[in-house]
Length: 158
Image (tube, rainbow, N blue to C red; front, top):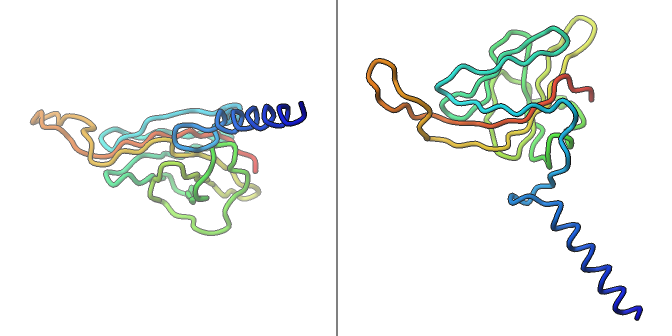
């Protein structure tokens, strides 16, 4: 009897662990409250992200980089993450205007003010390079570029 219970407990545990994984092998827990998903591509304008009345502008470059174009804001990678909720702290180094977008990697965007900092956390959930992202207005030719899908939360309080 004990042996059968042990086997059943093992199988239930295995099913729980396998059920918590996505097709990419990443834990997919619930997204934090306020999570937003956006699709960026290099042929379109980016997205404005707002924190406490301050906004930054983020877009995707042709090389699949995430670029922050508003002064005072910087972005840094936190490396491979298991979802947006696993980004819990702010990096101390690596801040730049532009970083390579990598699927499954997390990033923090910050704006330093006089008295405090505003933060946004994001994770790249999908990325494609050298894909058709639009059509040229004058010629009708296809435009090749990059597409990046991100989930973000703003504000993020570490």
